[in-house]
Image (cartoon, rainbow, N blue to C red; front, side, top):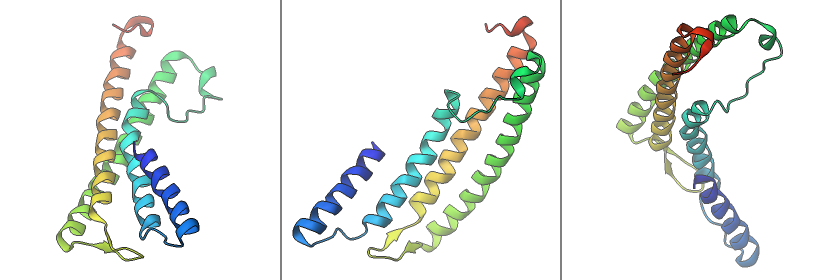
Length: 148
């Protein structure tokens, strides 16, 4: 839906700019905010589907148990990194909310909603990392990696 919003906004901008010589104010600001929201709100879903880029050139030749151990380590490191991102973006969101921070451009647009969505998207990704870690540990304990 967000991508369709960006597409509609950019199409309307082109239409109004070239046909009526009346550009839509704030198109760049709003579409860049929508793109950030699109990216951060979808990361947890993509992780749940194992859809992120995964290069297995070296690891595919390793024993299955070692692959699982490396995956658990990678998930824990990812969790730590995104926990820090969540923590810092929550602080940034709160400061932005308190001061009612605005990005000045063709149209003054509040910044706090985007910072909130980055913090929220990072938080949901952390939750997904936790689920993946528990799932990998549970599968590692089962014989031959069978899932129950």
